[in-house]
Amino acid sequence: MKIMLNQRPQGGLHGTLQVPGDKSLSHRGLILGAISTGTTTLRRFLPAADCLATLTALQALGVPIKRQGTTVTVTGVGLRGLRPASAALDLKNAGTATRLLTGLLAGQAFDSRLIGDASLSRRPMARVQAPLAKFGARVQTTSGHLPLTIHGRQLHAAQVRMTVASAQVKSALILAALQAPTASTIVEKQPTRDHTERLLRQFGGRITTAPDQRTIVVDPGAQLHGCDVTIPGDPSSAAFWLAAATIVPKSRLRLTNVGLNPTRLGFLRILKRMGGRVTVTPHTSATTTAEPVGDLLVSSAELTPVQLTAADIPAVIDELPLVALLAATANGVSTIRGAAELRFKETDRIATIVTELRKLGVAVTPLADGLIIDGRQTWQRPTTAFDSHGDHRIGMMMAVAALRLPAPVALVGAQAWEISYPAFLTDLQTVCRERVNAW
Ligand SMILES: O=C(O)C1=C[C@@H](OP(=O)(O)O)[C@@H](O)[C@H](O)C1
Ligand SMILES: C=C(OP(=O)(O)O)C(=O)O
Image (cartoon, rainbow, N blue to C red; front, side, top):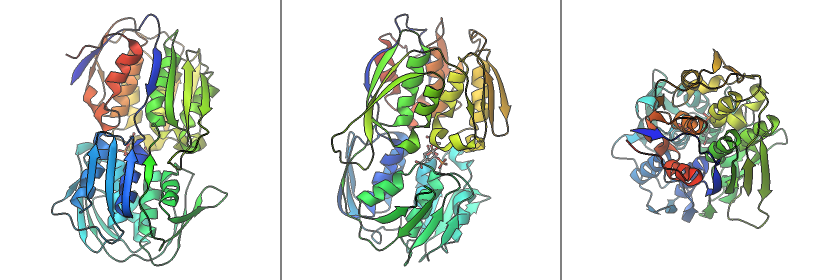
């Protein structure tokens, strides 16, 4: 789908948005609901293609799940109640679904086969296969990629030191550890988003994180019970509006019910380091989630450059395209290092960021593990359409860039935002109060 994005709204961006539910928590709520006993109700579930791939896969594994809009009811079957699927599970574009379900299915009493779309089939799977083998798992990849054949079997406990900073791999290992007879220890390379740990505790699981924030002990055997979970707004989706309001003059936006888990707030912290103007108002009343939530108020700002190193990356991994965009407006040279993981996402995001920012005349240099971005030139009018390259975050980042241009520009592959943010165009129209024409 090619769409035309209108030029900069003269009066800036205004209004209040409730961004959709968190993608990571929507996947995890479904999976933990499935392996619990009793009913789990997920409110503000994200009905995006990635999370629907997890939902459909769990249904194929015999889990009764009903969805009405953003409310999902999962009838838990317990850790031993899953049934073999009658065909390969197609996880489409969803890396999170693939890695987490691999950890779960490795400990089941049946074999499974996982497939995905062309993008997912290019992404590395040895990163889950190798550490899962420490639990006795037998996962067969196709030269390190999908299709995967998982030979389900009884797992044993393990002590695993992770070699990639990945919440997906960590979560796969936690789901495997739940199926071992005794406690396992997982040591992360760097702390990553801790949604699995928090949600597992809410479902009654026994899991502890040491003060170093990297050492996790999973004590299996506790009965998991279904819960009511209200999923917070996705901070990765909120980040598009934080970036947009910052770089479009005269803007002021309020974003409500956004997840404020510190392991996800890298973008907010970096935006503030660059001179961004954001006020955070945490909610103090009790919620039915193990996650902090609050409102954000953002207004336009002139930005200074930023230097990011490996320690900054896990908490901002999905927002790095937006950091690059902010850097392309800053009054100096920014550097992003320690971000080689960007090369293993839906696209090689270092390459796709460079291709798209160069259409604006931005001086951007790719590095093996990051980017150098000089924000000092005025953006040029692009002579070719922007392109998502089939990657939702790249497409939405360029839709945000278009908001700063003096003339309309086309975006090819806009439909990619269905992966994580199906209401993106509606929300864009809300904050612009101007028409965005579909071609
Ligand atoms: O665990 C998760 O829900 C996710 C972890 C991250 O991936 P990695 O674990 O591969 O870094 C992130 O990029 C992805 O969008 C969601
Ligand atoms: C990398 C992403 O997702 P996943 O790994 O689940 O495909 C993302 O949403 O940016």
